[in-house]
Image 1 (cartoon, rainbow, N blue to C red):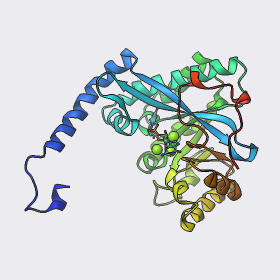
Image 2: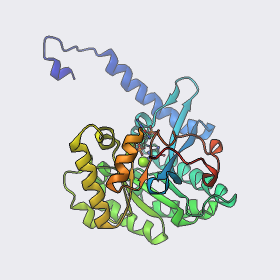
Image 3: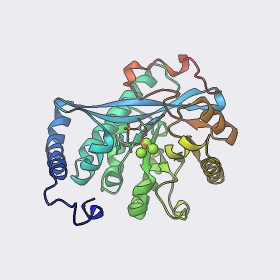
Image 4: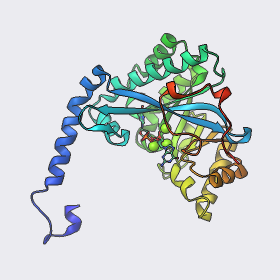
Length: 284
Ligand code: C2E
Ligand code: MG
Ligand code: MG
Ligand code: MG
């Protein structure tokens, strides 16, 4: 930033930068006590099947931090700090256990047995020895069957640590859990990694869905990703669907699954009704 402004306008003292780094340091220090005090909670966003009239087929667990003084801190802000400081291991463990427990409880109450729980995991977790055992423990203690669980890992993080991660991904799939590549289409310069990495699903990044009804190129990219998913025989989920036009366009292109504000915002699972009794949403 300072560089781009040039010498005349560059400032030696950057109050903004200073307070940002203090803010980061503070948040990092407050994370462990926050976890212990119960300031984190999970919200769940429905995943729907467009080919079945928008039926809910699963949910993605999304982490929230309600800070007593700063209010709600978005995950895009604190997850990178948790990754840098290593605290993502403890936090991620809590996320896995809590999400598996939440959904296992609902399955016991008669929710559809093929309900897919998606949990985001950081590559830092994945390459940590013992991660597979952590997942195994979360499944065992909750009673959630492994094939109800999909772990989402962002494509961009695989760009740097993909090879290290692939061993863990293989072992996770041996357990019966699934792996999906998140934010697909934004993170890699070459697609050749797809041939060496085990995965069961792709999630099309929101940026392509945003533009697809106005912009022919975004639509072409979505079309290509549908083709990739087909040829690898994996599930495909479109992220960030906000309008009925987008949902209709996705269905026309053959993308079966979708997620977005059109179908539901992320909310606590307690606020959900049984997906089997949920009114079908305007999927076109
Ligand atoms: P993500 O996994 O790609 O999650 C999708 C994000 O898009 C979520 O943001 C969700 O609230 C948002 N979203 C869903 N539908 C729409 C829509 O129709 N329009 C718009 N504008 N946004 C929509 P959120 O909850 O803020 O999470 C941001 C990111 O933080 C996630 O992106 C994920 O990478 C990360 N994250 C969240 N929870 C966890 C977690 O438990 N562990 C890890 N490692 N990362 C997490
Ligand atoms: Mg995700
Ligand atoms: Mg995503
Ligand atoms: Mg994301």
